[in-house]
Amino acid sequence: MTRSPRARSLAPLALGALLGLACSLAGCLGRAPTDSSPEASPGSYLFCFWNVENFFDDNLDGWKREPDKDFDTWFARDKRVLQQKLENLTRPLIALNEGRGPDILALAEVESARAADLLRDSLNRQLDPALSYSTVLMKDPHGGRSIATAIITRLPVDRDRTQLLGRRLRILEGHIVVNDRELVVLATHWTSRVSDKAGAGRAKYADQIYGRFQAMYRSNPEVDLLVCGDFNDNPDDASVTEHLHATGDRRKVRAVGTEPFLYDVLAPLWKENGETGKVATHVYRGHNFLFDHIVVSPGLLDDRGWHCDVNSARIISAGLVDRKGRPIPFGHEKDRLPLTARGASDHLPVAVRLEVAR
Image (tube, rainbow, N blue to C red; front, side, top):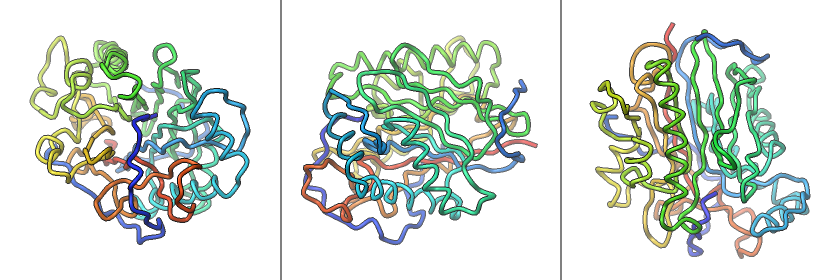
């Protein structure tokens, strides 16, 4: 979870505003067995990552530590709270992809598999049954807080290969398989700047992820790997550039070397506009941060297997921001805003289109 305190002065705005796909555009950017998910054909698919801000389920789990204890109690004892949260998350997601919702949805700050299932069911109620989300991938990292990552998809998966990386780290590895082409997704949530001011924790996350990429790359330089998450750092911070080896320079990514680079699809947009206020997925005390990333391997920049259309990368803002372009949080029980005036999350979703070769 992003534990950086959120601005309390966000102007209230009803989330029932017209939801389109108004968003910021980014600049230039082995065969495996599958489970019982429906068949999928080569083509174009929308990927989306979203930190959904303290998304707890309807069970009273008795967490002892704050703030989990308060959120656990609030969501479990007041059904209106959970229903409003689900509605606020479902509306903007369903509006994506011409009303079909993302084909692959990765999430952060999810308390439990039960919470992920509730969101999947809420989305499915708005969809044609043929487009239903069939699969939730999630494992509990047993970290300091109950704010794990999850993947929801309508595409076939190799469920048996789902795993967590590292010890007590929020790094979920999932495998999507379409037309015998495998996409590896790492859904991550790095330590916050509140608890990790010096950045050692975020560097640890980056090192763990990069080590996993290097192992896959040595075995198959064309591996299609997508890393997403709330990194709690911007594209130009050391954890991203030095430890994760992620860059906005595609020439570096395409070069062959002993230490291959990854491509951060929103880095060019941050470089050009980060200080102008036009680009942010999280805002705190008037400062803009691009904490939410989609990072891809060199294999996703070629035309074989899976391909990432980096020029399609977007920050989704429609219906999710106030008049100043700041994300509208759902907030805490003690906040004075009525439920109907609350937003969805203190982070904005990011999305990109992926293609699968025939």
